[in-house]
Amino acid sequence: MKKINRNDRLNGEFQKEIYEIITRRLKNPLITEMFSILAVDSSRDLSYAKVYVSVYSKNEEKKKATFEAIKADAKKIRYELSKVIRARTVPELNFVLDTSMDYGDKMDKLFKSINEGEKRD
Image 1 (tube, helix red, strand yellow):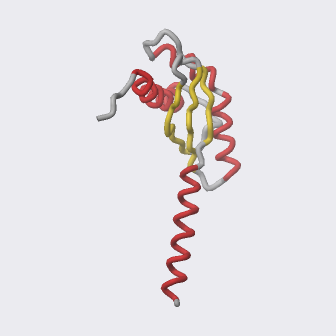
Image 2 (cartoon, helix red, strand yellow):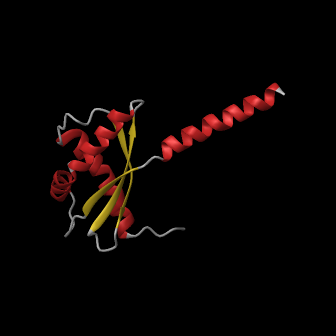
Image 3 (cartoon, one colour):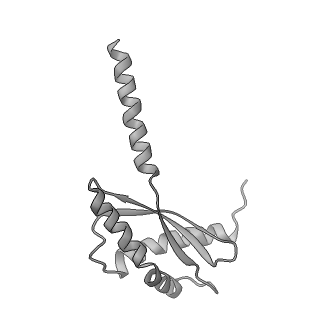
């Protein structure tokens, strides 16, 4: 049985609260596309945290603009997070665009096309 440590619990709380802050409290008109906070990975001393964000959009420009808007609001998000989280320190947030969903979609299409090629033979 895996022991859950304090950082793991805090990362889960950070993930949930960051999403809530962006969607409910920040009224940034530049965030136009659907997004998800996939994970938060904070350092042991809680001074830094990587926030993995996935943006869902067919339009690459809108996708990039939404991510950049989220990234630009990092200090505001951290400030709002400090109001909600009961911790001595709130980490500096570093937003990272997670493209694993795009990669998975690309691989699915590739496997599907290979599979269809085999059926024709």
